[in-house]
Length: 110
Image (cartoon, rainbow, N blue to C red; front, top):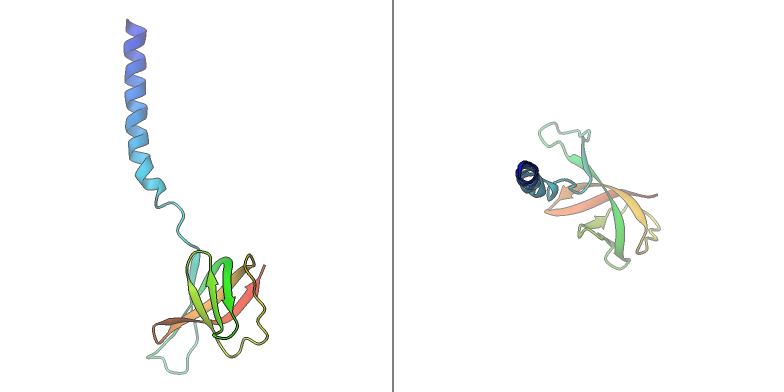
């Protein structure tokens, strides 16, 4: 009887630990986004550049829109010439927010 009682205590304690850990796992791996300050001539308006790594799900050449598999969409800046991205390409996008949209000024493939 003593062994069964000990086993019950261990099982109950294990279940309690799992119940506490499970909700934390949902927040364990957010999308990779890095922030870096950009230099600007007007110190009152310093643009924040961000970097996002992901996999291309679609690229529309007519609108110059790049969509990643995680759902983020980026408008390519005119400085990006001859873009040829296809679904499945692994990319790192450097971008800023402009007029409520993500404007990519650099896209590098891995």
